[in-house]
Length: 369
Ligand SMILES: [Zn+2]
Image (cartoon, rainbow, N blue to C red; front, side, top):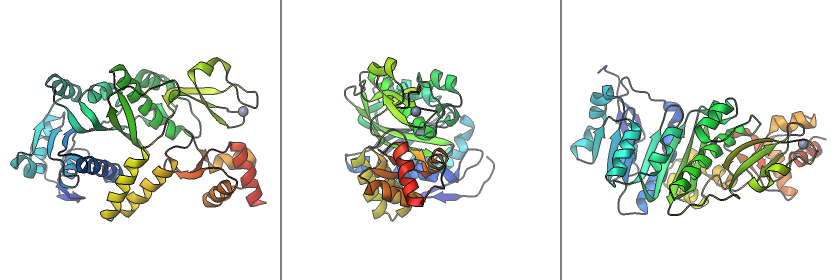
């Protein structure tokens, strides 16, 4: 094993060796640790499955920070065995973890065949997570949490719609709010796969972080996919307005300006996050003095139940042919006009609101004139 320096992240101490480790994606690991800690506090124990472990940093953090009681750590690449044995030594010595090297789908199939179900599954794939969704859901306890990563942002933001159709059974188009669409396509695929198995999911939180996007979902005992929460997002390329489109209205959709809409979907149209879970995670983040994570969770809480799109400031400026005011000025003016309006964690230069784009342009024009 090539010797590399020992490093730390949170309470984890580890070597990276030839494994992949990106320090910049720490926030997504922090959110997983917080959610697992909340889940642990609500139950007698926390059996955790780290399906694609890499160097083991997540497993170590779930053990030391979330206080997972038992961990199955799996990494498909057997060449990382020596590295993982070294990094996980404190857990393996305590017999608090086991280490295997299997393909993730085989791992889930083994667990399901043995009726071995988990409170928390971390599935951090490189590339599309779609091939693993149904098997991972089938390995969760009812009420358990699946934290799934995808790095296929290009297809989910509409740049490769055929790839999106193959992965999610949903056609993705390019438009200004496509980052949130990537999260909603993944939630929709999870919702549909769960329903086909006779279960439901509740989105816990959804996190866009540049090249990757992650969603955490809770398995529910009954399907909760309906034609009202799983449908289409319509976008007018002429005037920039959005509509949510239900299946029953598919043949009768057009923008108020008279133009036909482009349709993305089907995708999840319900809440992007579960507010009570975010509140519990935020309380814990503050108690650990994780203030930047708490601020992010507050932002996600505010956007959770707003319409499934947002308007970038540049889009408002371009459509209105005006110098756009600051985000904070525009948000304050939208709220003063009676609209709901918040920032979105998906785009630092955008507003998420129940106002139309035309309302945003009119209010921005009032501010700058
Ligand atoms: Zn239009």
